[in-house]
Image (cartoon, rainbow, N blue to C red):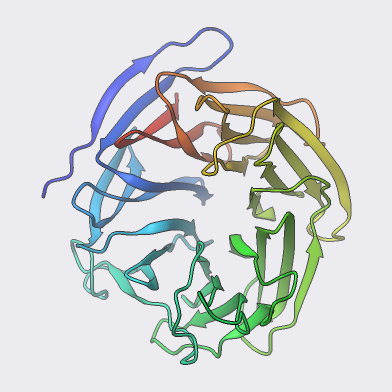
Length: 377
């Protein structure tokens, strides 16, 4: 089935906003976006489930997203995507009662994709984990092409002796590390956590992996400095007082700060940003960027991204309006200004990315029966 990418319009918005290109992909869902600049070259990708139920990835080139089908008849859900420091793209997702992945490789080296330029497979779980897992799996790739994954596990209908958040890695040749528990196992306060972001921030022979997770009214941040060998996890509670429904973390390789965004599910709906140093792990505090007297839908989430001099946060309001706010550092707890808004339909699941040096934003969000992209000009 041929994938159709429709360009809707180039619009000139009021002075409040910049100009954006709008593109839609009909029949698509489960979309996410990532943007990273490597050697002054923009690497912006989206991963999504296309109308045929396959995993598709599109790269932003010359003003358009150029799509390709990566894994045929493998419908992804809870999709995540990352771009490593060396430009390797890693897509992680849930499909067919398994966590799966697709990693970009040289043409002819892989086992999937239009030119066998992707390596597709299942994430190896411990043999005792035979029940249904859930949540979003997140990953990143280091400079040796080792893929690092963080995922949640749930035993449905059983005593939750194995519930928790776990880590595992895979070498380029296909060797898997032992599974390592970050939270749990067991019915502890960590056993209901779900990963929200993962990134690798140092080089081999050992790498530092950072992650964040949420669940049960708490958001956590952590790292391990000795992967893939004998992981030792340092975990910290993100400072917040209200029940957090969702959160996202941005990697500190783009800024001297780590930023977390959270959305409260109960009324009043609040979108908040928390800031800390990735080096001293000092918490600078929390600031509210949006508030509404109503409760947000259960699918609500926020997305945060940084560029060379500031950050942007995207979310949907209780009415399904897409909003993106922008600020310029060094403090990200206040001074957020309108950057983008789309009220043309009822939207959900916003994902934002920034071109690092230019500061141009790319926004992905979901409408009824399509995903939509807004590309700042």
